[in-house]
Image 1 (spheres, rainbow, N blue to C red):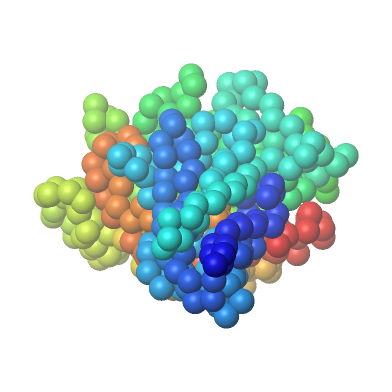
Image 2 (cartoon, rainbow, N blue to C red):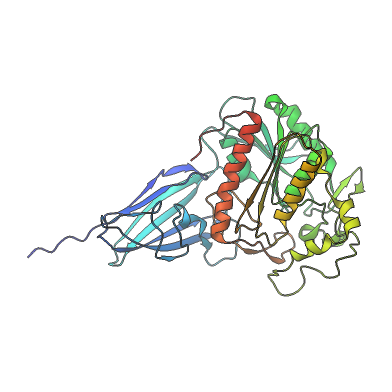
Length: 442
């Protein structure tokens, strides 16, 4: 008697190659009805660190598992999520929080492995790219500036977005490359912890950022003179500050998890120049007043104690109780002369970005701001709102400058939703205010 052949599963992925913001349809077929199959995802990310996730599924009556339809019955995530195997990944044998590759023009390759209860194994892979076909990358080392310019394949002129990183410093090439892939010329501008610049945020002159804005207007010749500033965390604080300080140079502000106040240098401060309470921004050589400058309401240090601290965000609420100092440190956002997009997480444990964003929106409303103001505030999201379809599991991490562990907040699922929603919301905002039709998005 001839035995019945064992079904051989097939993993199909559509599309196999695409931009990082594209969701994929992942299907495992060729299974027996109701068969259990474990699917793992393996990606080699920054510095060669491997990130992995795993989830177990039960096939339907046709022997099919479709991740756009089916929730896992166990594993690293627990909901219907087409790309859950990516955003639930964690580093293997490492504590590295770096989720992007070492070279932004190289794709991230993920291998999916499906294993049945009977031990049958099959694999398939897909690529996530930051650069669409024809996008160019150019390092900028002019006028004392340190940055990277990404230009879309289509002929210009293009609307321009200046991209600023947060308190980790460096140059945010992944976000800039993705903006260029969606039709915007993007200038990722470093302002500390980048080649030739200070390793600390302490005493960063606003004149340096002003030079970057003037360079973008002069050299990039943006369509309609449009130059937006986008920043994350301390970069969000900086984006609002630049819009308020140089309104003639900033056409729009996009502030991810921003501060509404000027803060001290905090975790990115130079220990030799005041450390956590040191000056962050100067103009004309004069320090800008900040919330930790002899604050009468704060009598404890948020980074003290065992790591990772979960209460350090509380110091910001305490700091605001010194109302006189808070008024001096407040960013005068009413001076911004263009549209403003605010993006925050309601479970931000690094600082209260939801409150800060509401404070900014309220101030603009009270002053009759004549331009579009939009606030995207995400449930169950923390401080680390990122590009879509990347791991969102690093709820606590070590600060890249101070090396002090801290807590971002949010849940992996909530952070993943915020990653996707903030990215699509930002592109919709830019498209609306520029009249630009970006590349189609999925």
